[in-house]
Amino acid sequence: QVQLVESGGGLVQAGGSLRLSCVASGGTFSSYVMGWFRQAPGKEREFVAATSWSGERTYYPDSVKGRFTISRDNAKNTVYLQMNSLKPEDAAVYYCAARLSWLVVSTPSGYDYWGQGTQITVSS
Image (cartoon, rainbow, N blue to C red; front, top):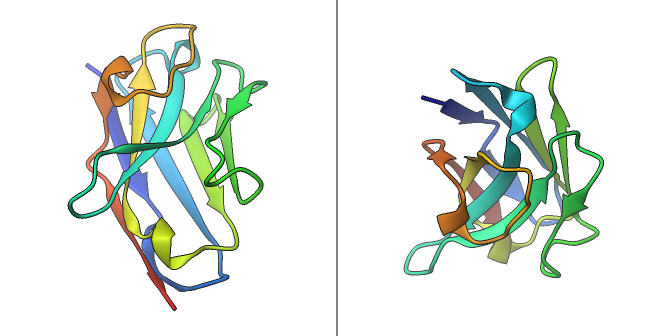
């Protein structure tokens, strides 16, 4: 069983930055595709970023491309999400997720384990 614990959420002004962290335990972290998703009230869970096993390949939707950066440190069993130039529409609960496969996907159903989520609030 893989456990994921996010941290780093909070309140930030529009245009500001935050870095989220997600620490994994209970499995072989370097064998997981890792992703970040977000969910705002009344909306579906949305893909934000994903990274391959090694971290060499990263994927983003257009809504965050150029502003968000996903990275991982396999030695620390940790994946990060650096968020810059935050906008009010980025406000949501952010989740990290692990996928037990080499293939990176952007659909929530493709991920096997989820963290509890961390709230991001962006004031305008």
